[in-house]
Image (cartoon, rainbow, N blue to C red):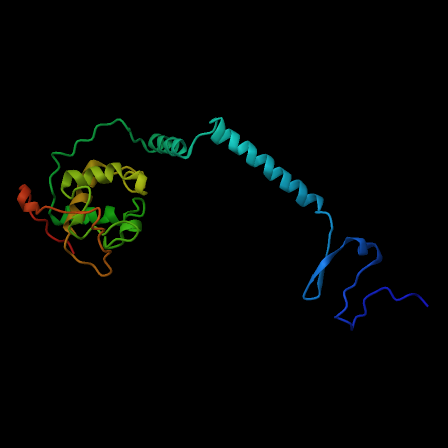
Length: 223
């Protein structure tokens, strides 16, 4: 009769230890589970060595020798590529000092269309009613970078890349005519108090001056 060397099927309390594994058996046991001191699989070991070599190379290339571009340099490169692709001239002087607040219904409607256009991403950050999502609420009277026509057109055209807003919201340039209508539309939303409006960050916001004090007409709300 052959010697019984296999684990009985109906004996779950006994671990199956083969003869050639007894020298590898470690001296600790948890909940009846014992561990064998096996060598690591070659595929895992070689993969680990590759990650070490890659990490050292990455560190030398980007941080020690400075051969690779930094995150800031990569950003500048991508912005330059986007400017070339969409025809944006970074050195182009933009003067919006003569911009006029538009209040007629046709201009505000066109501004609303630009604001809601998927290519400009205004609603992505500011919400369908400009109530603020990731970006600030554009309907209140607390802004940081100025809320007159010139300041607003500069803010839109240049964006705030360090705060996550690229030029024109999506780098897709807007013509000056549409830009003026967009800025006028946004100003027209001031004081509309949409539902779910995001609270202003008072630590970095300033109250807008009354547009009538600057000689501008109070915009007529379009909605």
